[in-house]
Length: 176
Image (cartoon, rainbow, N blue to C red):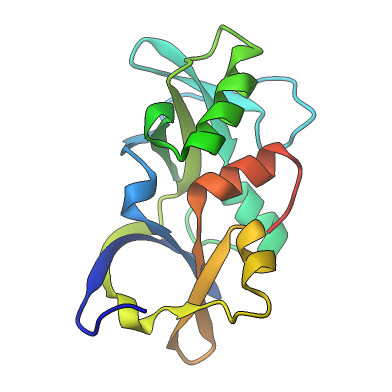
C-alpha cells in the first residue's frame, strides 16, 4: 500500500477517451523518429525498424497496439520512440527479448524501440490515487500487463500498464 504523499514519475500517454500510464523506470530514454523502414513480419506491431546510434533498432508499435486493442484514437499523428535497453529489463523478459533479437543479427542486440504517440508527458502522480487491481482478478490482469487504474475526470480512465510485460505479450500475440 503506498504511503500517503508518495509520488512516482509516470509517462502519461494521452488519447481521446483514456490514457495509459507507464512507470518512468520502465524505459531508458526517448528519441524522435526520423525515418522508419518497414519489414515483412507476421506480427503487425513488430514490422518496422529505424537507425539509432549507428545501428538498426527494431521497433514495436505500442501506439497502434493500444489504439487497436482499446478502440481509441489520438489527436496527433506524430510519434516518438521510447528506448529500452535490454540490460535494464526484468531478467525473464531480457532473456525473451535477446532470443527474439538474436534471430536477426542485423538489429541491435542491446536496445529495442517502442513507438508511442507524441501526445505524452512525464508527470509526477500521487501513488495513493492508483487503484491497484482487486485480489480476485489481480493475477489475470497482471498477466495482461494491466497493473491498475486511476480516474482523473468525468468519463476518463487512466490504465497503469507494465511496458515490458506488454512488449512480451505483443511478441507472443497476446492482447491486453
